[in-house]
Image (tube, rainbow, N blue to C red; front, side, top):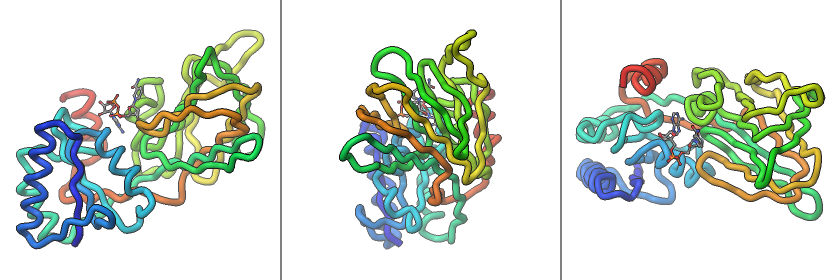
Amino acid sequence: MKFTVRSRGDQESNMIAQKVHNYLEEFQLTSDVSEPDIVVSVGGDGTMLEAFHVYNHRLEDVSFVGVHTGHLGFYADWQPEEVEKLVIHIAKTPFKIVEYPLLEVIIRYYGEKKAERFLALNECSVKSTEGSIVMDIEIKGESFETFRGDGLCISTPSGSTAYNKALGGAILHPSLACIQLAEMASINNRVYRTVGSPLVLPQHHTCLLKPVKEADFQVTIDHLTLLQQDVKSIQCRVAEEKIRFARFRPFPFWKRVRESFITG
Ligand code: NAD
């Protein structure tokens, strides 16, 4: 089996990443940065988001596992003290794979620029570079509402505990293949009206955001921020691809939610 280890880059994460790397080589596993079968991310959720974006062109062939060097992460759920155990699991046991849904985002432009496609593990957020955004929102090809406000966040179920949660969105179990659309401070008065509640859309229900007037947008895909100009539409739906996490022991999602937000 081929592996790679990615570190957040701080001293502690580098040290643990090196330790994992050495142990795995002692077990005769081969280090391969370009085509690993397993990616061990050492750091926090942000490190896992980065690892996902580095290897998102070969999601069918790679699985991910995360060690946290700060507080418990949603994607990074192994502790530094447990790395010996983790390495033995990776080297010796056929591991279980858990697949989580992803968000597909297609941005289309006016003019010559070709449409671009992105995959998000957590979410895509759309904000203005100046003032509020005004977007017509279509769901499954039908006009739904015109949004005016700070922005919109479209998240995956595993991303529902991140930015989406701060916006009052629901926490969704990652076994549900869906996406969630949450508003950021919508303007609601006699002129502008939105539904006001987060919406959960199933697979194949596409959500299309169409700018009402020409403007620049700040679009984020997970931790990546992109300045977008001449945007004609932003299309969001559940992606065909999924991310695969290597599971060596049960750590139920609701337990992680409880330990991250209630008892931790
Ligand atoms: P960061 O360093 O600002 O960290 C953001 C925090 O979000 C970290 O504590 C991280 O552990 C946590 N986080 C990330 N993914 C999570 C998940 N799926 N469930 C629960 N917590 C999660 O930024 P980063 O590490 O580069 O992470 C980028 C993420 O930050 C974005 O994908 C977005 O979800 C989140 N974010 C949150 C807010 C907010 O809550 N108000 C605002 C902007 C971005």
